[in-house]
Length: 215
Image (cartoon, rainbow, N blue to C red; front, side, top):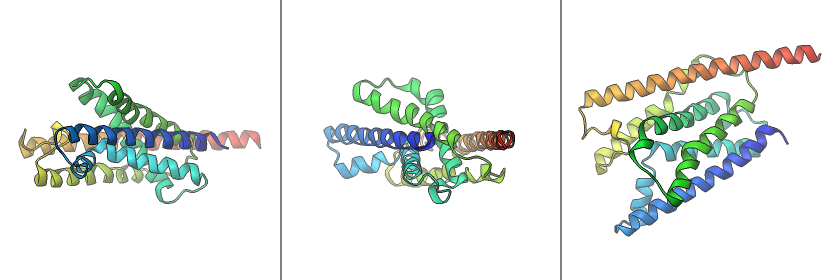
């Protein structure tokens, strides 16, 4: 069994545990305040972190079950988008959000899994995968995930008044300021995607050079 497949299987398992634990915590917490499980589920799926962890957990699960596949969830540019997205979760949480609260107990465990362990495991899985299948255009493709989330988050926020992140809350700032926040985050997202495409090209070049030497 390849190292990438082992990491994918482990990452998928950890991802499922983290997502399930976080779901149980939010249902329990909101239930104590009188919310129904349906309301808690609706709130659970408001977060970019949860949606992105779900995305990468599915990508790793499929990578473990079909390690040779390079289509669908495991196509090079989709795996790139998943990797950039979850590392973005890691960066934004630790730079902008972690200082705003202090989770304890089971919440701390869930917090570490979805914001640190899963991102780093997905990054390792991506590094172990075959490289050389990405183009620079693939970096622009990665912008689809945060753009889709922005539309989704703002639409549902207009419906129920809840915004998962303070920097995407139009009730706390002007639409112009919000647009600048989103544009800045998307620009950083794409810039990081370009970095990973460069890493992909470098790893592919090293792999080809090693194959030549072995021949």
